[in-house]
Image 1 (tube, helix red, strand yellow):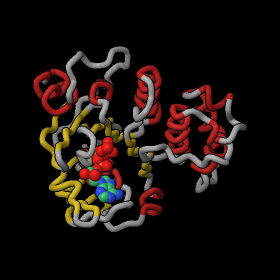
Image 2 (cartoon, protein in one colour):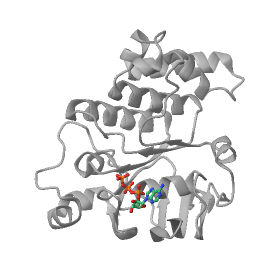
Image 3 (tube, rainbow, N blue to C red):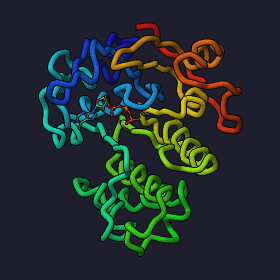
Length: 261
Ligand code: ATP
């Protein structure tokens, strides 16, 4: 096996980011392997969104480095990072409310020239979320919160990313819709080979679908391990994540083995 095959796809080293005088994350190092679902868990305000904003170039870190597929991206603009195949689905969905559902999807594919493949990808996301096919001609602003979350994720897929940064997909959704979204996240990962870094307060669900997890507290990574092992550590779950019951049933864990770095 080549050395490159053992390289992480995304690597953060010792990142510190702030909003003015407020330091939001400190000394954060993490890795995402190709084809992996990785999760960052932590309570409200722990710094999860700040990690994703720093990766996607919305926020410049005060210190540390970010690399994607072996290339330093720390000082790149968000648009350049998107072109490299790294897509951020921010908290709060941010669909274009006046555009139709179909046009929102086409916006995700605006840099692509392969029109036939764009059409196939639209069919694939309609297969993941049939409600979007039913609503294809309606303005996206008329969709429910859960449907907008589906559209935001689908629009990211239309850009054919190799890595998706997913910010709290469960936010404001019912348990049933959260379950549905996470099931599709696993399918996107398996069927398209897309790596996913998902940050969540719903640790129960994320631990069940991800391969590897980081626990963030007050802007610092306090623990990392395979989700298989994190699922077994009920003491850790109760202490850091407030989980008291057993992990979410129904969505099958991705269950991949992580490479030893
Ligand atoms: P949440 O689930 O509430 O989004 P989070 O773990 O994603 O939480 P962040 O949004 O990354 O946390 O916030 C980390 C810290 O940075 C918090 O103390 C928050 O108040 C602060 N913060 C976040 N955004 C801003 C901002 N635009 N200006 C100032 N402080 C901010």
